Length: 140
Image (cartoon, rainbow, N blue to C red; front, top):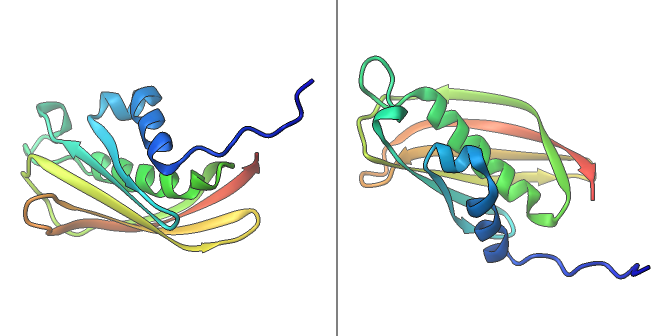
């Protein structure tokens, strides 16, 4: 039996894997584009399926982008986490065709990780929504 630990994935390998294997992200046209020790970025192509009844970007897409970016940066230590709590604010609507979501770790503890996220228009940089996410570590 091989008890040797597998080497930790690089940040690029983590992004490539999640972009290939996460059906929810694929379905919603969300891709991981940057990952570091304390930050992550995702982008999304806005399609007709991303719009609400007013033909603007649905708030659910913004929330999901923020949570995915936060989860990506939280899990970059190779451990498994689940979302424990969130607080989210919608600041303005948008008809942009591309969005980006960024997340940063504010504190990583032994079992809980705190992050802050923002979602903005890719072209203008206008912030559309922001929030905080708390993740619970389930272990290796």
